[in-house]
Image 1 (cartoon, rainbow over the protein chains, first blue to last red):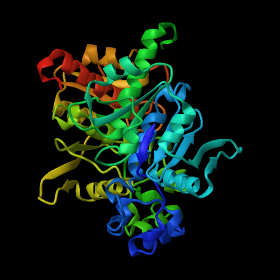
Image 2 (tube, rainbow over the protein chains, first blue to last red):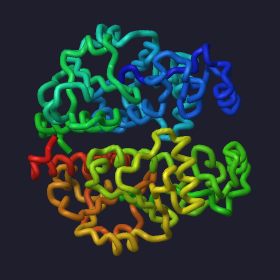
Image 3 (spheres, rainbow over the protein chains, first blue to last red):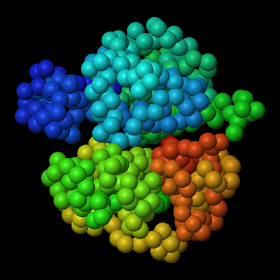
Length: 227
Length: 227
């Protein structure tokens, strides 16, 4: 679960800013149908509330790629969701691959925000987006435990966190924003919060380590299935 | 060490192709000063030799980001090199951060291919590029062991590979290309080659797991330094 992800389309209030409209023109889209992206919209973002945790689709791209590239996900033992800054929930079809090319990822996400769904050429649903808070998703998925990963959490290690918490339906929550901490609404949903290293780590590094430890735990407990 | 990386500028022979020149025009650069990228140049690449393992700067971006985001690199316990398809060697300054935004990464790499060096605003060298094969680099760095990671290697696990091989100056070599195997010249340089999973893994996943296991081994052996 990637939470409070810095992924959204350009909001109305800055759609007319020159930095935004020149980028939209290059992409051949309306400004509100392009992703908010600090790399292009830095000047325009100054007037946005909470701008420090918005407009980083690159972070979400890396985090998502990390999760979807693991054997755990590829073999159907992991569900991946993204909760965005604007309270949208994105769910991924089992085994989904997203493109490593940012240009292609951007196109996919723009389509998702516009249509609420991305389908394969054969019509299968690959990704869906709906309005919803993280609390809504937890009510729906009903995980046995909700574990937050944050540099402000209890000091531990990825191995220990997984050993203690990875039971049948544990939800690990990683922040999809550039700096700072989870909001209070998010923190209130965690059964516990851990820091897995003595320093701050990028979201994608935390994801790689937690999921790898989950795979190792699975192999230890079901050695017959181990590769 | 990321080897045979699919990172190069557009070669002369396809510089005039419409797919190439239209992308170059958008970037405001000469075609030969833009990165070869299958996302944009697919049609033009058909006539390139070995095109299946070229033009994937996105793979190199993910792999490099993975290595440079680890505490192992941040704390100065890892040197990172990229060897490219065209036999260029890129070395990274200690503690270097590369941008997660592909747009910014692309600009950085284009500058590196043009100038052979990327410097900070203060004039410090951040990345350097020079002509050289992987064999040249090994002669220079003199690692105690050279370990290839490949789905064609001996079946093992990241933990076992690190346990057996991570001594003072071990060089781990990961392929920076989309599919297939290392070339014969590269394979001949390996002391041993391992596969760390029962399935093919993306380069960035292999990097994440090997480096994480290196950190774990360091912490086990020097517990006083552990976080």
